[in-house]
Length: 327
Ligand SMILES: Nc1nc2c(ncn2[C@@H]2O[C@H](COP(=O)(O)OP(=O)(O)O)[C@@H](O)[C@H]2O)c(=O)[nH]1
Ligand SMILES: [Mg+2]
Image 1 (cartoon, rainbow, N blue to C red):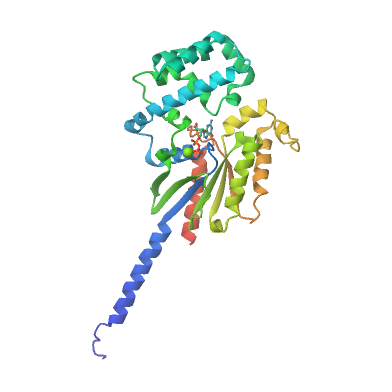
Image 2: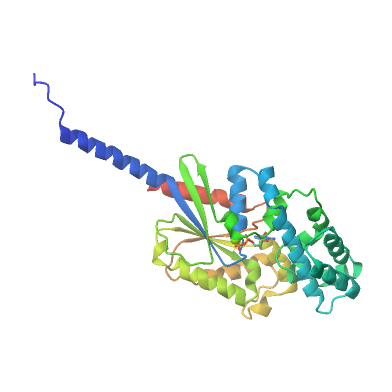
C-alpha cells in the first residue's frame, strides 16, 4: 500500500487558479451590455422607459410625480408649436393673439392652460388641423399633450404611464438602466447620436424613426447607422434595427406620400410596403454583411395584446440568452 502523500502545494495552487478562472468566466457570461443608438428623437429614451416598465414594473407614484413639471413643459412646447403652425394661414386670429400675450406674460399657469385649451378646441382650429392632420404638422405627440392640457396643468395632476411614455425628457434621466433575468444582468446604455468605440457589446439596437422618411432627416439616420454597423467594434455584436414610430408613420403616409420623397418608390400608400422600402434603404448600407434583425416598433404602445415593443424585447432577450449560453 502506498504511503499517504503530503499535500502538493502546486496542485492546490493550480486548483485555486482554476476556481478563479471559472468564476471570472461565469461573471463574463452573465453581464450583457446593450447599446441603444439613433438620432435625436428616434425613441431611444422611450424604449429605455419601456424596458424599465417591463422589468421593474410600472413607475412608482414618486417617479411619476418627478415627471410632472417636464410633462407640463411638453404641453407648453406643444402649444407654441400650434401657434407657429397656425401662423401659416390658420384661423382664429384673436385666440392666437390672446395666447401669444399669455405666453409673453410669465411662467405657465392655469390661465395659460385655459387659453391653450380654448384655442386648440376652437371649431375653426379643429377643422383646420383636421384638414392637415395635426400629427404631420406638429412633432410626435404634441397633439396628445394639447388634448390633455387642462389635466396636466391642474395643481393636483399626477402623470400617468402614457403621459410619461409620450413625453420628451432631458436625457440625463434615462441614460442607463440595468435589469436582471435569471443569472444574466443586462446593462442598457443610451449612447445617443454619438459614435462609440465601445468593445464587448452584446447587442446594438439602432433606433430609426420611420416618420423621418422626409428625405434629409432619414439621410442623417442612415449615415449614422452605416458608420456604426460597419464598424469593426461591432463585428461580434448582435445587431438590431428598430424601425420606430410606426403608428405616426401610418398617419404621415396619407398626407405626405412616399413617392414625393423617393421618386423610385412605386408601391403606393401601403404602410407595410413603405416600411419594406425604408428597411431596404438601411439594409443596403450593410457593407460588412452583418446579420441584422429588423423590427417594426411603436415605442409608446403599452397594450400587451398588440404586437409591440414588449414582444420585440422578448425576442431580444431570447437571442441574447441563446448567444450567451452558447459562448
Ligand atoms: N407616437 C409615437 N411617439 C414616439 C414613439 N417613439 C418615441 N416617441 C416619442 O418621440 C419623442 C422622442 O422620443 P425619445 O425617446 O425622447 O427620443 P430620443 O431622443 O431618441 O431619446 C417622445 O415624445 C416620445 O414619446 C413611437 O413609436 N410612437
Ligand atoms: Mg433621449
